[in-house]
Image (cartoon, rainbow, N blue to C red; front, side):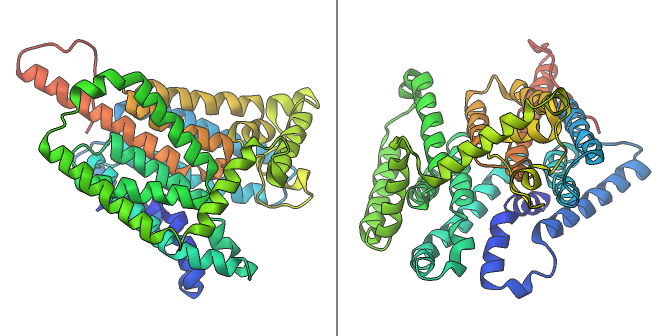
Length: 416
């Protein structure tokens, strides 16, 4: 149950987009907040049971550095409220960052969190949302060309593409027990969505990590992959179904495919279009202010300050690079803490190539498109990957002890 609520929590941004577009009146309570309250209630029940009746607390041991650094980072964000130029949005940003904390903490502190069930649920639920979006977007986009009221739904293309890329990597690398036929269909669905969504960053970053995977493990892949009858049958049926679907849908999605191709070709344009020029201006402005004086360089201009300083409006705005945003608002100290956090995550998963590739995909997208308060999915996926390995190592250690052997290296233990 907790894995289901946690998946809804991570995907709540997309769920809210559908609810706000089709039934805005039903959004009495923010859906992300609602999921967070359910997660908190579930943890309080477990905490009370363990603490008062068993005198124990549960915490995945390997998570301690992650939690320590992230809490330190959050406290520093709070300190910068003292001198931020933002009169209001800075406080909102502090509150919204709590969703990142929840995304990190739940897998680490909730005893019995099933990481395999989570990845399967995330793949199914995310693919379901993506299927609905993909089915509706041709009509929505056609209406958007006539009426800007449809803009909010159309601009979700980046989030849709980002989640589609994550799901493809999860299906390929973290769901070995899923039936191959279902896996191929889900990968095909998400790949088609990436093509028609016009999400250039997620598409290019996904291609990059998959090319790395093929380049590094081509020989191993060829040796381990058995082209038996069952595998050949699944491949032929899966590709055939996807090819048939693409053939019948090509006309319906022609405008979106044309849009995707146009956006990709813009990358070859030296001018890059208005959006690229705007981002260049943001980057230039950020560096100018960061290196304006030692105070800005070391301590930043305060959380939430970019919007009011760049445009004169106290609202959400950021230079579309999470490191640059951190440096602008939280200074070098904030950058050091954030990079340390990423390094700890990387250290925990560095020996598993597939997990490292997921890390690279998530990080590259955060460096291109997202703000500090948009990293809920990234932190959530990385945290579950960490406990995936930690619990697997613990199981291996237990097996070694039962067989009277000592493991080659010290393994993490899970208290409680």
